[in-house]
Image (tube, rainbow, N blue to C red; front, side, top):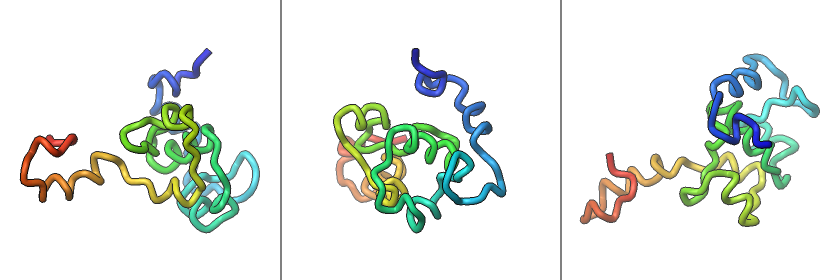
Amino acid sequence: MASSVENGQDRALAATSYTSAKRPVCEGASMLYGRELLLHGEKRNAVLDLPEIHRYGIESYGDADYVCIYGLRPEQWYARGIRVLGRTAVECTRDALASAPSCRHASNGALCAYTT
């Protein structure tokens, strides 16, 4: 049975269950999956599993699906065998945000998939 986070429901509730303002960045269940841990800590060169990808998205951005790759949600790219290191997850930029500069410079608006 899929969890409510996987079904896209109750994401705000899931985000608040993980978020803590002053939690230490250390080993164990209380570890904050934030930029510091993934970019400079013990998870820098570690291959993250799907729950860790979701946890990073929830704790850092309030969105389990934050780490999208080429428009694919984490479940989709993970199912296709794509894996990322902690430092790579931190470097991911939302597709809509990343496409904004290219859309401004595109000569044809049809080239931009994320127009508003």
